[in-house]
Image (cartoon, rainbow, N blue to C red; front, top):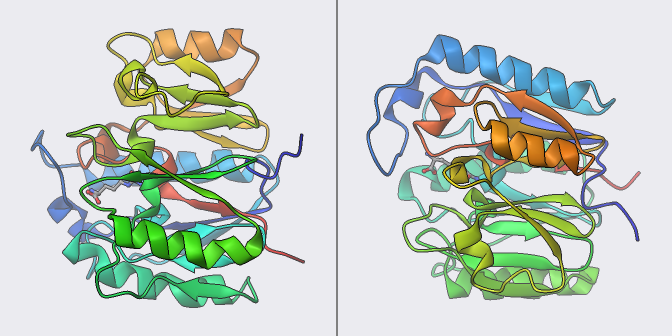
Length: 265
Ligand code: CIR
């Protein structure tokens, strides 16, 4: 089996803006500390870089409070990139801001452009064999259909799945660990969407750590979830825990903070 769904030569990140205190959140659990978030962000970038990848660090974009969560702006595949059309009105402009950085690395950059199409890449999980897209409050049927038509010529199959009610994004509740293994909350796995994959469940009460990333040899997961960490270590993964207390106040996790890809050489 190939490993292009988790081996990457590049990542793009964006520095947190001071306006992050106005970022979107489902429940207000307090104002994030920018200083601590910057420290966590630096640890995150250092972990990505330690795998040998090139990390592009973009300047903060003050006009967009949630712009540190770059993942939602694009889907990066081996053949090309697709600029998303975020369903959160305050985030719509973030996608266009990302486009030139993708065009610098990819010859083929497409854009979701239908007036009725909405899609955020936090709802997209790319495995070795398919692209799963969760319909959510941010991602609708028109967005999924437009993405499917856009990437079909590159040989990618989209499968529509559901994001559990009250959960921000599909990947809030799951992550790819390797070509055949998914980390998932029990509530998401219960929907049957991972039939055919090996699934490792987050420990009871630790659902908030389901948003992890496999990046080359590392699995980056939020710090503070010891039972799930121990399960991943026991399964043979090289786990790196990263502080996520401040991004968590804005419903953000490990995947949201980067675009991960290997542009065609
Ligand atoms: C939002 O609500 O859009 C941000 N506060 C959090 C985005 C997290 N992104 C992600 O899960 N991919």
